Length: 228
Image (tube, rainbow, N blue to C red; front, side, top):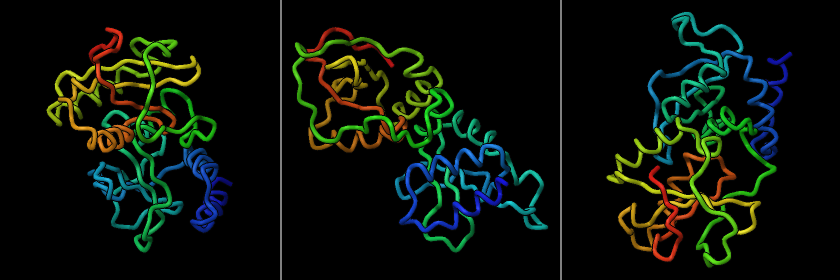
């Protein structure tokens, strides 16, 4: 039954696919085995690493080793442990993958139990965040549930590669409903304003789509920034 439903979903045109389509496909794949096209991650147009998977309901090609197929659940955990995203397609003729999962989407599903595409949450804000610290109703370090230790480890490794050796963070909210994860501007080397959007865009790949990120100066802020 799963094979039939998966094939029906994949037969839907790109224009007719929605976030609900993504989630439905992922849920069906959780009990399936997929072909690992290449055991080494490839880098997408966004410059992030992805493991390339292929939906192969039939047996793999005769010359393909048995180890070439893995359960989707196992692959999710493998990718999470290594800070790698996933892409899925049906064949070599496709111009664009059927499914793309950033690492943030993977750990959000595994650690927070949220859908791969969380359609019920507020998306990340874009542009300049203007507020006064007097308006802040909550601030402090993130909890382990909000930012698991395994996630911190991958983030620290990535930032160290960018020569950001002591990143500092805090959580704050203006209404105790929506929370921002703020990175200390000074701990990032005080980059100029024109670089802020690109930095936040890069960081967003590591987080669930509904997490709201900010790059904020410690000047004028409460002394609540903590080391990542």
